[in-house]
Image (tube, rainbow, N blue to C red):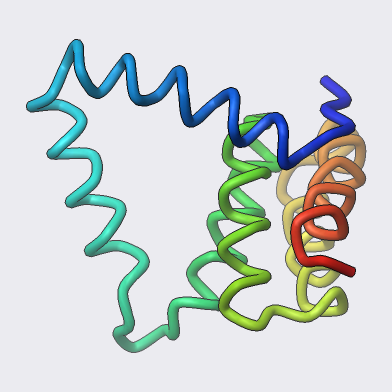
Length: 115
């Protein structure tokens, strides 16, 4: 899906996710803890982990993943060149569909990084 307005997409998704969290608070709390502990600093820095998550989002064809992880990668200082390399790895692992979603990921990063 071509999102176009990534910031608006995030706002709409945030609203949907809030309703979901309200309906399944235990699952949402568990998911939040997994996300927090997975992306936190460790042997890999958080920026690298967000780039990995972005690449996985490409191969999974997950628009929400592209939006949130592109925004987080930008916030953590990822460069456009680093995003392009992560997209390259995703294409290697996911083939043609990853090329299409790689272009979407780059559009998300460009729109959400302020650049």
